Amino acid sequence: METFAVRRRDWTRRRRALIDAAFALLVVAALIGAIRAECADEVDLGSIAGIICELSLPKYAGRLTGTDGNWAAVKYVADYFERLGLASPDGLDGYLQPYVQPTRLMHSPPRLEILDASGSVARQFKFTTQFSPSTAPGCRISGEVTAPGVILEHVDDIDRVRGEAVLLVPMHLAANPTEIEAVMRRVTSSSGRDQARLLGVVLEVDTSGRGYFPIGSFVAPGSFPTDRGDAGRQSMAEPASNEPMVFTCDRPTFAELAARSAAATTATAAASSTSRTIRMSTDYSVEPVRTANVVGVLPGGARHIIVGAHLDHVGSNMDGTYNAGAMDNASGVAAMIEIARALSASPVRPPLTVVFVAFNGEEQFMYGSRHYVSEPCLPLGDAIMVNIDTVGSPRGVLLQIENAAGRDTQLVRDLCSAAAQLGMGFRKSASSGTDHSSFANAGVEAANLIQPDFAGGYHGPGDTADGVDPGRVAEVVRLVLAYIRTARTAPPD
Ligand SMILES: [Zn+2]
Image (cartoon, rainbow, N blue to C red; front, side, top):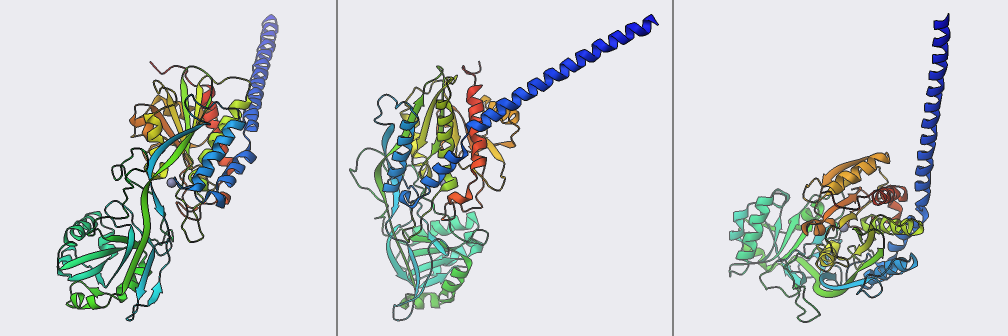
């Protein structure tokens, strides 16, 4: 009996202990829930959406570095930093870090046309949906060429072409890197010769999955002096006369051009030089422009983190359309500003000093972030860098936490565990295609956050604000906030 009574008391005690433990668990869960709810509430979806809509407006005209629209975006971000009470770093005037970089500017839309026997335009193709110029160094980017079309079936047939010609390169050559490299090498070396002057090259490309040619504004380093001022307005607009004009076009356009051209293997290739049926023209220049990064500081602990996002995009198509760059990368700028807003609204100083940088020139080989690294506002020392480029996927594309050059860093591991704690889906990957790599190359631990969703229209007029989900941008904001608030205040040993 006694045994039973003891057992019973024992059981009652255990039950109490169990109930207490369960209650404690409930309290903890409720607290975590409350903290999560508070974190969720502090992120303002309306503010994120407003910034994305604003930077996508026509007045910014796609924010191409060096244009008025880009300067308007610079001013918008600087004004925002001021309203949030961020500090302008020592030595900068109103948050602006000016520098000079080359920019490729389009002055009027490129043209690709078929001419009839009298030289009148018989057919005009549409820029971006049917063709696009290549503006890589070595291609002629301004002026006009008119010549008969000659279709290339084999690389060696280039030697059979006589007189001036526009070379039509079908997909079986154009899509093969080895073949196309051989074609371009032969075109450049043979075009100066007497027997053939290859004025233009049109490459057949399959755009069926996309329906347009994404606009690039790439200006490779080394193609232009980056030193000061507008001294020496060196430009690829006046290239050596033997540089061909190179276009890519879609399959139907190529078929139409080919129907009016001769095969390089036939004798008519030479004879046809009397009928100049293809006209190509472009109107670009590459010029040094004065531009600026925008830098704002929120003081915190001794160690600092750079939170960056590029504000530039690829600009206007000069035909009444422009590339708004809502996802690429108004979304990242909105995330960065929202992080600044949430941290500066909090009464608690962050454990790290946070340097917010809206980079310029990312679309043109990351000139802005490379400039920042060469002249950092705070010594980079043991700094860390988190970049945000292309977020807000409305199609549920998973967040990627990217390091540069495949290095598994403590920063990436910490970001992953912060994402896991927030119950956020993500995957780790590597990329060097955006601004974090400028920092990684300088020895700074750096990561990029991206939801790589290009279905809305990568570098094209389709990348508009209504194609970005502010809720997905908010995910990234919460992740960076959680990371900063729990960050290591010293580098790992
Ligand atoms: Zn881009």
